[in-house]
Length: 283
Image (cartoon, rainbow, N blue to C red):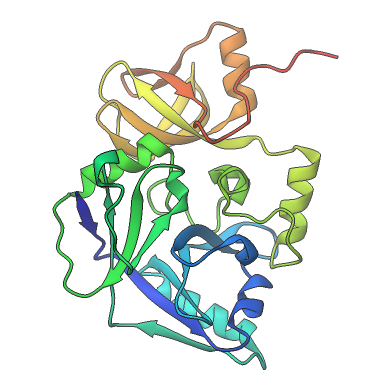
């Protein structure tokens, strides 16, 4: 089973009687739908609804949670959560006793038992698991993990979007479970809810295939000289990108090619998503 150890990830623990209510009122993930042994995408938003921090959240013990986040921003996430704590009966701490890793199984391995693992729901039905223990070693490199994320259209900040720049809808949290659209209020919820119910999301994560090798992460996607998006994670001729769906639809309707560097691209909607890249018929 390939395993990738993430030296650039850190774990924040939130424990105590009020840990769940504290998080439920602050982050995007609906914790009522998160079971033991599951890990899900989550975010802490600005009041304007943009992603200030992204992370993977899972339950830990009877009254605790893990947030695994980028190591470079984890101290700031810890401070922000502490600000929201107020009088809640909860302890928030940055762990130095865990190593974040992921491994993925073939169907033939699916019965493997590991009580310390959490199934990563961002990958849908695929057998991808998050683990938090000391001493894990990598048997897969960064390219292996990138290929896995591209295949299942799993975005992460730093590669696919910049913190403070993207709405949850941009990175499909509304489609994959990273946003609880029916839960109560949380930071930034008004903007997210309005965007969802009015159908105003125009930037969306898509899968990209090129006819030649793709240029580097951050390269623009162009229709003629007009930019319609930017590349995120790239591996060979495949990658992820956040694009303006209306401009992609216009290009397709007009028979115009989408390019990045020397590559002519085909764009596709991730399997778990329900939006379209086709032009809507006029009423």
